[in-house]
Image: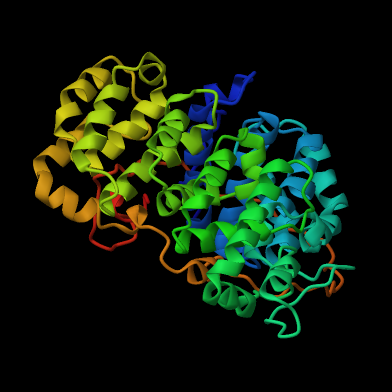
Length: 471
């Protein structure tokens, strides 16, 4: 008996519209759609049979990255995909950006082919499906080859995953025959192994290592578009100088934060949203105007401006700024037309106002919600009301003590969490493309529920989402 689970027989109307520019709401819609598709696919017996040779996590990752990157790099929504865009995303973008093992990239073409056929069989129209499937089959081996080649990795992936670099002198452990400065110069090009010994010696001799580390930041800032693919010195510098509370690094970090978004993505990758606020807060030299300028200028990258906002709570948490000072500043921002007319910035301020319990601005925020000035995909007024209900003491106990508002304490340990490991250059032959039976395909209906900031965290910690995995 066939399960009565169904993909929508018609493509969502919004997916029929071609976007002329990148829209955040479309990204969210695609994310929710792919999440529901994955959830229901993996729950159905027939799909489990088709995907039996693959890990569920790989299937979900492949579908999610594919759908979001097709839009992010080519403005193509599900169903609008072209063979050329699919080729670029699978052959170039994903190997450059996605940190997964060889098995994932080896199976990527197979997983996506099954996924596309399942969609088509269930009535979800996939344009150009034959040419897309042919392209996936044709480039199956090249996908894995590109993913294994460190020359194709973006800076964020390079930081997470070390690989052998040809024709470059490198060291993994500290070389006693060289000076601290010379050791550091060698590791600015990525290593086979995480150079913990060199970094430990840099920590032990801050006076000698700090000028070199600062030079790495300057080098990265001045050459963002022309850096060696394997350059990683600025990543070490950001973590170590933050640990050292090196105030001379602060203006350099702020210079980097003011770079165009494309250059920031090259230099920082996921560190832009994960750690930039900590780098700013950890090296703060007392020049609050640099942070304010970044926050208030709409010409700068949105995510860098968000990091600057969040750094203020780090400074409050570490008694570098008074809580009332930041609350008054938020109040000023809510009178700034450039901020008021940016629903993303308004959402960021609303979320942070909750975390710092900025009671003074709650009424202004309420009016902004009523005037639809705030991105409701990020925060809703009901979530502010939940914060008010919790009260100041409980809110501050959780918010300002969360790891999201801490300075970098151990830069080497923080870097270790990004999973440096030895690259593997072995390239065993790929298995032949396996046929799969798409008869009697299960149909499913996706259901979605967005997790609110004040909802219980899905991870099961018992904490609210905003106090746990949201950060």
